[in-house]
Image 1 (cartoon, rainbow, N blue to C red):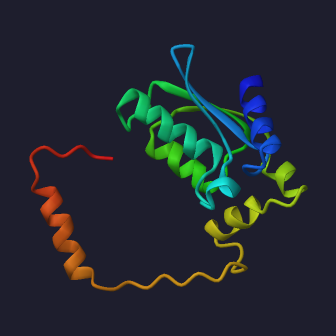
Image 2 (cartoon, rainbow, N blue to C red):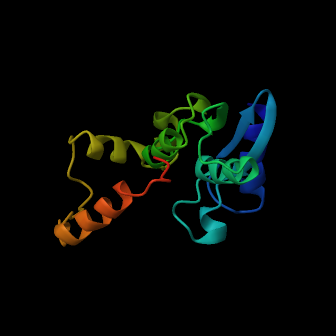
Length: 150
């Protein structure tokens, strides 16, 4: 965990983003490490966990990280949780909680409440369009013989 904390501190010192660091470990070996780079890259998805997953996948040449563990200095936000799920990571060790980061101005709890239908504070419009054309795309995928599911 100390490596994740150090990584988060590195991001703070260089003004790359929020105070978050993460690393991916496989068989006791650090595969990747990252800190929040939202400010550095102007990319709202450049969270430490997402970047660590991307880098680990590149190193291992596989999107399936099921044999890996993730260490992160703070409880993952909903976006990062989704990335962890898609990467098939089964164990996540975290330090500070979503309540702790809310106390310093990060609004992760807003997203949890929105996902659970407890608030409409975030005004998002989801509009279903061109469904038939998109179903055709799904049909093409399902007919491929060499596909790998998520």
